Image (cartoon, rainbow, N blue to C red; front, side):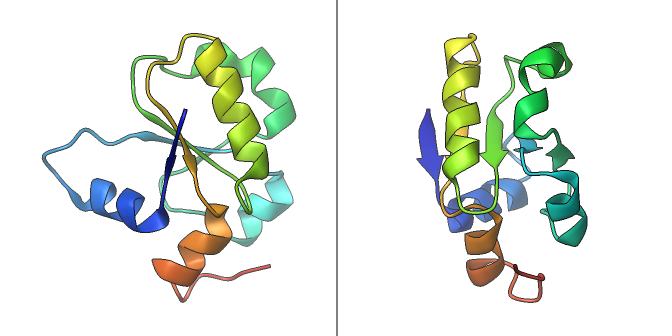
Length: 107
């Protein structure tokens, strides 16, 4: 598992020459409804193990939560299950809002 800064993720998403990563938001539905990164898929942390087959283990995966703690745990779990390119968004959606999307709501 690697960490990725919000600015690095923004550059990756803007680079049409790179395949887009899966954006896995592991927060709770109320958190996701309040604010989220466009294109992210909601899969609350507790639901990841039983829904593992819904994810592509061969595609790069960015795990996202509020500040980076839950997403780090999910990223380590995915890596232990054979996912080849797993990243944790450092600082989570809160850091994304501060540095990439200043108009995004924060909590």
